[in-house]
Amino acid sequence: MIDIKEKRAFHVSGWAVVAIDIILIVYAVVYFIKLLGEPPMTAAFFGRLGALLLVGLSCGGFFVLHPNEAMVFTFVGRYFGSVRTAGFHWTNPFCAKHRVTLRVSNLVSEKIKVNDACGNPIEIAAVVVWHVIDTAKARFNVDNYKNFVAIQSETAVRQLASHYPYDSHDKDQESLRTDPDKIAAKLREQVQERLAVSGVNVVEARLMHLAYAPEIAQVMLRRQQAEAIIAARQKIVDGAVGMVDMALKGLENAGVVHLDQDKKAAMVNNLLVALVSESETTPIINTGTLYT
Image 1 (cartoon, rainbow, N blue to C red):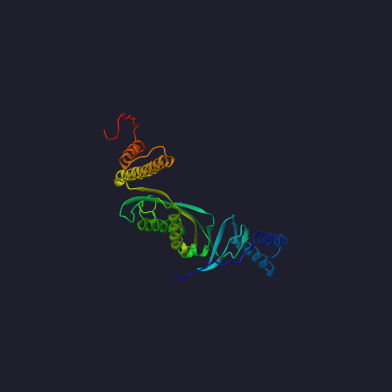
Image 2: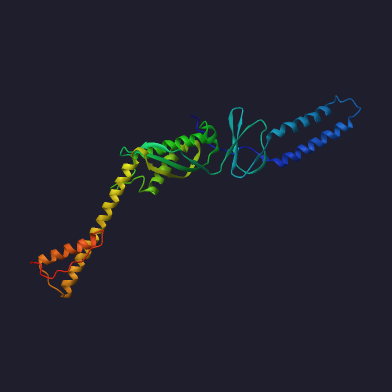
């Protein structure tokens, strides 16, 4: 494949050419008026007629560009150049013109079902923000650059999803759910690598939908709930142990009471039950001793 790079095409102000055309038209019309009733077959006649034909031919070279638009020109099958400047322009009238937008576009991919790194079926979709930076590559290196962006973006999303788990129990392992910024950066890198040949720059790529597939969604939801309960219990137990330790040390340091190991064990048991229990505890007053 021939790698074509963008270059500037020859063009001039369209208003200057319009002024020249008007002068040629006026010049020819005045001459034809003077020839009324006289033999027209003279060299001057054909010269004025050629001027009018030249004016008509030049009309094919006019074109208008809006901001953030470009025009790509081809001449007898060869790349002639591109123009990016907004305004009214004129170029070689024999060139074929192809308009290319330079505006930033959003691509919202379809929800696709893939298997993550753990083999779990998931639904995933992404949004890709992109724009054309090389009009020649966008026009000639790929058949249709918009379709190319859509297909390659979906391929990159599939590849990314297969290399990362949906969720991770290891804090050091990246996952699709817990590391959105890192995943977005990786996705942008992969999409940009695939779209470089088409002259497209990827501004941002980010996951916009991520969920387990319906057939395993309920099972995975219960799993996540169980993990959340375990984590919460662990936090409660850690906090309760710290509070009991602080209470025992505070009592001993203050000299309020001296406890042997059995009494410490009983106190620890009572405090842990009171702190960890989900329901309200009912205090029981012991009127005897621990050993009766």
